[in-house]
Image 1 (cartoon, rainbow, N blue to C red):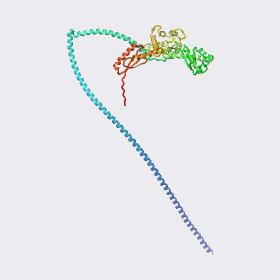
Image 2: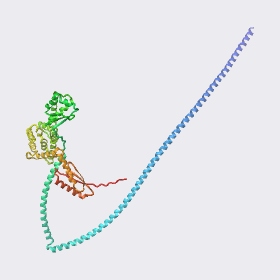
Image 3: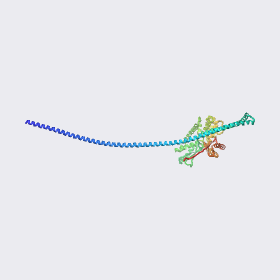
Image 4: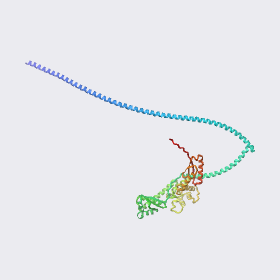
Length: 537
């Protein structure tokens, strides 16, 4: 039992082991198949994924190729357009170049034609010159033969004259020399007389020339003479404020300035009247300041008058200093400078006296320099010659005597004092400086526009000047220029030729000398102008 049991136990144990082995084998086979199936499934998935990726890659490659083709086509189109454009531009450049070449060729052809014509003309001129030279040579031969005949005839005539006159050639020559010497002596005496007269005339002309140069190099502005000043008002209501209550403001103003205020129906103006230009200027400036300030009452008026009077006095001194500096006069006494500055507000016949004095000083200086003498005295005397006019409305006496007194009082040079005393010929001038100041004063006073009274005469003289020049036959137009120092005469070219213009100028000058009075000289300028006009259509 025990053995059988053991056998059965052994058999059952072996069966179990076989089953286990079989089970293991079956499990391994199943695992192998399962793994194979899994592997095959993975491989299938990988193949499908690879196929998908390949398909996507092919699709993307197609898209890329398509885009590349499109870009290439666009680039090719752009390159073709650029090429066509460049080709077109080059064709245009070639066309323009061809056109320019054609134009240049045409111009060269024209120049060649002109050169051919000029060459032909030159050949003709050369031929004509050769003919003329031939004629000249023939003429020279004829002249030579004529000279020989004349020489022979001269010898025969000389012999005949010696026979008839009974004198030899030497005796006749001596007789002729004696007669010629007598004639030359008479002509020399007449020529000497003419030279003396011409020298005097030239001296007068030179003096006039110096004066005219001095006038041309000096100019000055001039004020208008008046004894009244006009002050503009902002409105007519201001008149009442200036008059004040019961007229107290206007009385205070007239009392403080010594000037009459004229208030009438003239709109927006007040007139100031006074023979003293300095007082009138003080009143004018005071009134303008009061109008601007707006405070108008007696106390304010007196305060403003004092202030303006000081300003005017300072301005007078400054004007005198500026005048002396302008003409280069130095070392004047301070009081003379102040008196000189007062001439700024003094006028004579519409001419500002300070400006006139500056002008006289400048003219005198220029004339003295032209004559080769020191211009300092003449300049100083010219500036001070009318200084008496600054005080002639305050003191008794003529402006000449007052000027002499002022110059002596402040120890001016004796030549300056003499020039002041003699500038109106009250005494006889004894120095060159005095004569120069006289001339400069006359020029400054008498020049066109200097004084109102001479302006009308100046205009009449200019009109007469043009009228005389226009009275000649063949004259078309006349123009007086340079303040009447030159007359320009335009003639009709069909009536007056070039040769006749010389005689016409002389005739006009002679008639001006005979019929017109004028300072200096007048230049007669005859102009003959020929114009040819044609229109290009």
